[in-house]
Image 1 (spheres, rainbow, N blue to C red):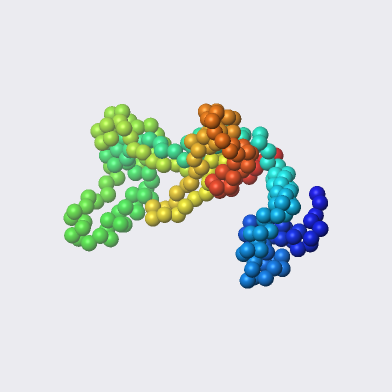
Image 2 (cartoon, rainbow, N blue to C red; image 1 turned 60 degrees about the vertical axis):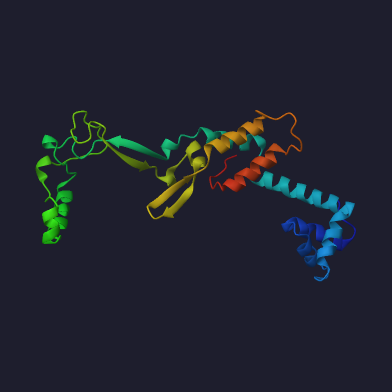
Length: 243
């Protein structure tokens, strides 16, 4: 790799690759701020500078790829892993017994005595008017409710359909495909939302990389590896990449 003989041209080329801002690159290379806009524009038109910029950017790209050990196989495998990941390993909606499925005589089924006692305390703290509107806690349904039990087909309250509830994986212990699918959390008015990468988008990118459904008349085809790396950056995946 050969440096430009004109030191200021070489410095401009180096600075331009930092942010691709010709005006700022010209200023950092020592040109007057008053004329940096036109100077930068003119400098980029010089064949030797344009060639040098291309050379530097290729070197930077190759260095990045080598440092993070990216290649087409790894990138395409990542997209395949995201596209085939089972989101149920990260979060799922399950159906279990409702509170009346296994209660004595299908009455309200309490988890523990402590839960019942807490309900009594809350009821006793209500005003007399509100107590008249509410039913006092009744323990005759018994204790030992578990929502993970299957719904009782004979339950008169839920008709055997049970009660749904959401479950979430410990995101600090994710492995395999689902670790790539996980894309952080977002707090909202309802609590915390788990963000995931778009599986269909990943499948689409993989299909593009493999050349599936490619328009034979398409022009200006971009480099698949460059496009994949760019898409990963836009998706913002924080998952570690293994070599």
